Amino acid sequence: MSDFPIAFRDSAQAQEIINKLASTERLFVVSDFDGTLAHHSTDIYAVPVNQDSIDALSAFAELPNTFAAALSGRHLDGLKKVFPLRAPVLLGGSHGAETEGEESALSEDMKTFLDRVGGELNAIAADYEGAFVEEKPFHRGLHVKAVYERNPKEANAALARGLEVDPGDYFVTEGKNLVEFSATTATKGTWLETHRKTVDATAVVFLGDDTTDEHGFAVLDQPNDLGVKVGDGDTGAYLRVADIDEVATFLQTLLKARQDFLTN
Ligand SMILES: [Mg+2]
Image 1 (cartoon, protein in one colour):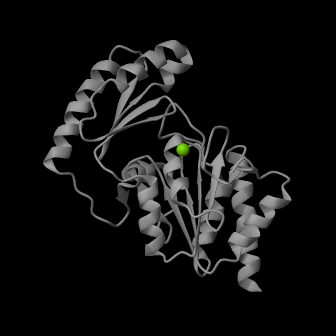
Image 2: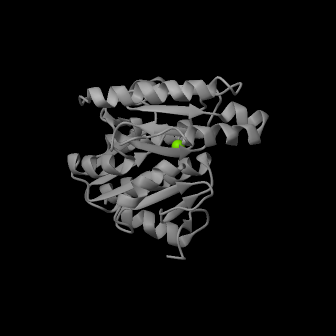
C-alpha cells in the first residue's frame, strides 16, 4: 500500500484509473462539500463554492447510468443553504445520518444525550472568544476555528476540554478545529454503502478532505471504486488531489472520460 495514494497531477497512472472508472456500467460520483467543493470560511453560510465542480456534478447527474451526490457533515438544511444542486443529485447530511427525501427521527435517549452534551460544550465555548457550538439534528459540535486563528494553543486547550465530555454510549469524533458528538451510528461509510445500492452502482468515486471522509474511503472496494483525498494527511484513498481547484480538474477529467465512454 506504500504506492498509495497516487498523485492526480501529471500522472499517467491517474488517467488510467479515471478511464477505468469512467467505463463502469453504473457510475456513482459522491463528494464531500466543505474543503472539497467549497473553501472553508469562518462564516459557514458564506463559503466560496467552486462553480466548475458544481457544474461537473450537475452534468454527471444528467448522464445515463450516472449518479451524483453531495455527502456532508452539515445537517441537510444547512447543506441546502450552500450547495446549489437538487434532484436528481442526491443530498446526504449530518455525516450520512440524513438523506434528502427520507425521514429520520431521534429517540428520547438520543435527545437526552444531545441536550446534555450541547450544554457541556456551550459551557466550554463560553470560555473561548470565537468558539461556538453547532447544533445539527444528530450532532453537537464545538468549533474553534476563530480561536485557532487568534491563538492555536487556546484552541487546542478548548478541543481537549471538549474531548473530556463523556460520550456515553454514543460517539465523539475530531475534525479540523472541531470536536463533534454524534447520536447516530451513521457515517459517510454507512451512507455510501446504503446509497450505492439505491442507485445500483457498479463503481463509486468519493472525494473528501477531512478525517470523517476516511469512513467513506474505508468502505470503498478500491481500485474498482475510487477514493480521492483532497490535500495532505494520511488516507485510505487511492488518489490524492492537491486542493479544491484540483477537485474541479479531476471531476472535469472524469466527466469527459464518462461522456466519451457513453458516446462510443
Ligand atoms: Mg470536508
